[in-house]
Length: 92
View 1 (tube, rainbow, N blue to C red):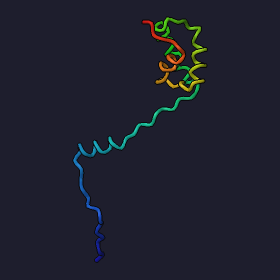
View 2 (view 1 turned 45 degrees about the horizontal axis):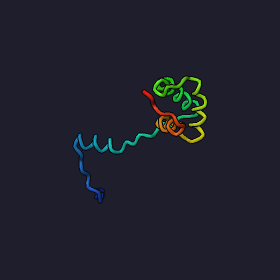
View 3 (view 1 turned 90 degrees about the vertical axis):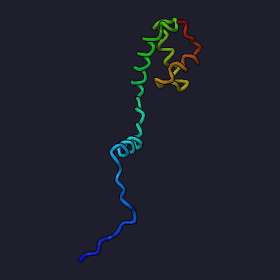
View 4 (view 1 turned 60 degrees about the vertical axis):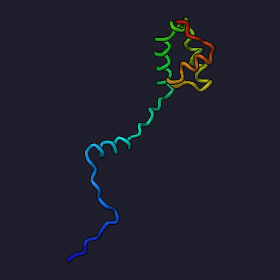
């Protein structure tokens, strides 16, 4: 007869809810990395929907984008801070 090896770890079974919670805790979403064209397009959409709130026209878009790239605020979550850094305030 073959000897059975005893493992040092005890096998504990989790309930279904505990297993789901454990798997959910292991999930860490990776931030989506945008390339330069995608960031530019995101700013174009942002500016198209917010230019009236700042009381400015579309012609300022290129200068604003260059400013945002220069100061390192070219990601979509930093657009409002970058415009504030440029000196634009919301009027509406």
